[in-house]
Structures are given as C-alpha cells and as structure tokens.
Image 1 (cartoon, rainbow, N blue to C red):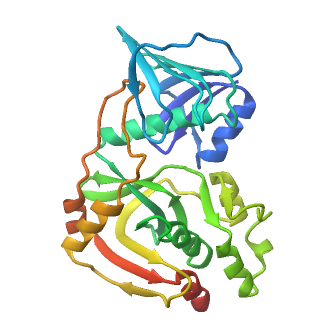
Image 2 (tube, rainbow, N blue to C red):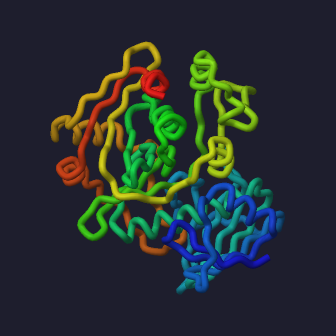
Length: 323
C-alpha cells in the first residue's frame, strides 16, 4: 500500500507498506497530512530473510538500537542484530530511497524509529537541540517541564491537559531552537507512561475516570498510552510545535503543598539544565549517514532569553482545587 504523507511539517514520505503498518504510524505520529511530494521513498518489509553483517562501524543513534554501518559510494547499509527492545533488521539507503527489511518486527517499531530518526536529523539541521522534558501548549505558547528521574514531568503534562485546557506537545523529549529570532519547542512522539497513583488521586476526589479514559490499564504500576490512545482517552489533540514561553524545573510530589518560584536566576537555570536536561540515551550516531550532525546545547542563551520557574509539591491537587 502506498501513502505520501507529511509528518510534523518537517518531512514528506512516500511509504510502501501494508495497511496495518500505516495504522501503526498514525497511532504514534499526530496530525499526519497528505503531501504532493516526498523527501524520502521508504519500502518496509517484515518477516523476510537477509544476511547477517558483522564488519563495519558501530553506530548508536538517538534512543535506538546499535547498528553496524557500511557505506559504498552513495549506498549506506546499516545492520542491527536482535537486541533487547529491537528485532534484527537491515536498512539500506541510496540517496532518498530507503529499504527496511525486518525479521520479526512488532507494531512496525523499526519503521517508526526510522521516521523518528529522519525527524531528528531535520531538527539538527535547523540547529535545534533536545531537552529531556515534557511539553504542553497553553494559549498558543509552549511550556516545558524538566527535572530528575521521577520528578513529575509526566504528572505536570497530565495535570495541564486534564485540568488546565492545555494540549500535549511531548511527554519525554522536546527539541528547542530558534526560528526567525524566536525560541520554538518541537515534540517527538514517544509513548506516554504514568504512575497508577496519579489516577488514584483523581479517584479520591470522586472524579469519574470513565469521563477521561476509555479503559484504565491497572495491570501494573504504570499506565502506558501511545499518542492516539492518549488523545482519544482524554479528548485532546496532539500538537507538534509552538513558540516557547516558559521552562519549569519540577520537583513534584503528592505530600507537599504546591509552590511556584518565578524567574529563577540565570546561574540556577544553567545549572539545572546541565544536570537534568540530558537523558542517558542522548546519543546521536547517524546510521543513515544523512548529515552526521550533533547538537549544540545552547543552555546559556536559552536561560537568558526564556523565563525559568521552579515548581514543587502536589500540582495535581493544586489544579483540582482550582477546577
């Protein structure tokens, strides 16, 4: 099946794949639009045989499996053996044509990771850099939430979507950069995971969960949504990007009263970004050999030009009272 689509306003793809694969793509990339032209032509085939490749340059892309890469003239051959979260696959790029061969790919994960890699390469060309942060759009402006592990990045996003009429941009990784002299935020569509406890807090306030979620997944301590599931469950629309107005350093918990400190110092902003802005999986190996670019983390300029706040305590309880 053939579709020519635009993703995120950044890339146009002509994709040859089964209909179920295109359904998988639509679940994870919001607001896909049709396009009249393409930047890349992609052929995706699953459950096929190909030869293992052992020699070549080992490349670790952004939040992806390791690839063994070889280049012969304009042909790039990237092989990835079966790994913990990835099936064995072979990617061959020649100019703007990309072939993907997979042994046993589930939910079209290899293709989705490749599309994400194409988005990242385009953002790096635009001199954007990633922050390990969730992001929402409120009143047509982007607001970021970043902090340490379990600091409440997802809780802040969930609270604002549910109780503050905001729209999701990103749950985990947000790219930021300047366009026409103004800072912009661009989200990547990773799955959204919440602690089950956040829903118990809602139940304790006698809010009917069925109003917000079709089928709560209480099988484990985590509840996971893809982009489509989250949008449908909570009656929202996923937004790709927006002008950046505020960055919040968060240290949220349900025990303490919510507090907000506005306009923290330049020194503290840079310090917190340097400490918590990067994820351990921030690697930028270019397994497609498109531009071999690495980001420049402009923390100082960002801190000088965008408002930084600090949020602590129980943000969900705070907005429940306001609601």
